[in-house]
Image (cartoon, one colour):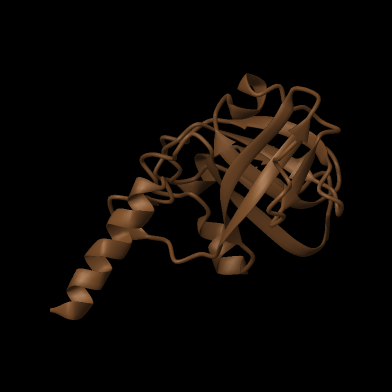
Length: 163
């Protein structure tokens, strides 16, 4: 009984933060971040997908994502400009920012859900520049906040988004 109560509480808490859908929490580490742009500083809460299986699943099956929430995909190596992401089983329109090793945005792409049940029918979205990590946010997030290539993501610094 106690275990069930804890699961219900954890699911409700994560759903309220926009980090889980009705199917339950994703159990990924969460990182506080800040996009630093000419338009200002923009705090975000990011699930961190650093394992291959977590990166492959990404935001598949999610029906909602809080306004300032997203997913950070990290790699321990540089990826080529031809490598990128796809939207198989992803229900939400997303924008993705590709970042260099210092967290500087090298490119931003719009990605659209793929309605096909066949993975081969879904387009891929290559980065267009070499990158070390990427951040998926709700469609329009970067444009709405004036975040562009050359701006930067700072992670896990309590003062990152303070003046």
